[in-house]
Amino acid sequence: MCFVEYDRAADVSADAKQDKWDVCFLAFDPKRARTIDFTKPYLQIEGSYLAGPSETARGAEELVASGAPVGSVKGSAYTLTLQRKTGSEHLVIFEDFKSLLNAFLDSKVAAIAGIHQVMLAQSEKRPGIRVLYPPFMKIRQAIGVPQGRPRAKAMLEDWRSSLVQDGTMGELLEKHGVGRECLFT
Image 1 (cartoon, one colour):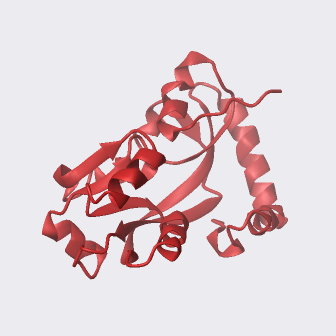
Image 2: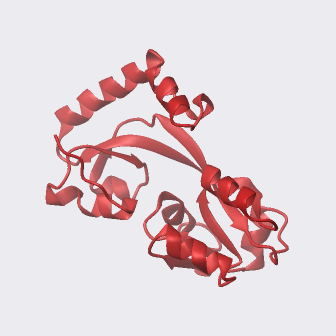
């Protein structure tokens, strides 16, 4: 067994038909499901906006309604979701989180979209920036296999179910700082 590392989730789904990997742990999205068969989710986290010091929106809906430019990472679950929602014309897509964060810190976008815990951590590091509520989405993480492998998917579904039921998945989440409350049962 070997691990194949990817910097972006978009590249994992793009390689699903290339026989470069056998199992992935990825946020479910209908676009990704065109090439990947997913188990039921095992984890649910939220997608949130991080607003800069000059952004006056008090909440997520107000930010979208304002038409302010919002940065997001290409191919991420939150980007794929936001591209289907009202306000998508104001999205500014970046190749990776580093370039997204740099653009935000340089005030090239008024806010950025991302995983709630990551946005919260960024807000705690920098005075004047804040997470907007409510979160704009729930991200459901699942186990995937390239399409056309029904036996593999069934085996992984059984494995996922047993890890959730016996408490192992909750323990793993807590061990890695995610929190048992994010477990999707």
